[in-house]
Amino acid sequence: MSRRLAALALTALLVGCTPLLQNAPAPALYTLEVPALPAAGTGDEVLRVRLTGVAAGYEQPLMAYREGDALALRYFATARWVSAPGELVTERLGEALERTGRFRAVLTGAPPPVADYRLELELLRLEQDYRGGGGAGEARIGLRIRLLDREGELIAQRRVEATAAAEAAGPAAAAAAANRALADLAAELDGWLHQQLADPRRGRW
Image (tube, rainbow, N blue to C red; front, side, top):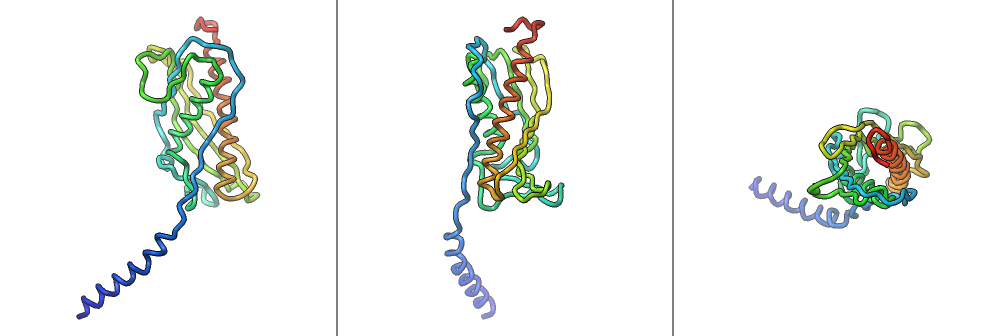
């Protein structure tokens, strides 16, 4: 009898919780966009932009933030990115670089048969940081980048990071700040690429 009563009680509990689960709001989805960078003429070369790694904690489309304990990475319960952060950043940077006209094509999908240059990206962080005080926090995006030639020889590598202050607390303001930080990072990346490929020793531009 006791087992039967326990089973009935469990069933009643599950049935009672079902409406709560059904009524839970779906998380808001946020994306990243990069405003147009300055036009750079018309290039003849093909650049492949490829994501080669993602730091632990940023593999899923969760919106990360830090507060208090610097070692604790937390996630907004009511918000998500539309896709995994590494993929989203790679796609948007590739689109921004292609629109400059600096390259004949910028590819971010499957490997092309031939690419004159490869830009390899490793996402180190994409998060909202509330540790600086002030309440609203700031968005932080960090990348490790490597530029290689057609033969796979390393041309240059570096780490880049961009930050942008949020105008309010919460995931919506965090997403807006992340977009501003990514725009700054894209501009810095474009200038760095021009500097590397304009080196007269490479016979380019």
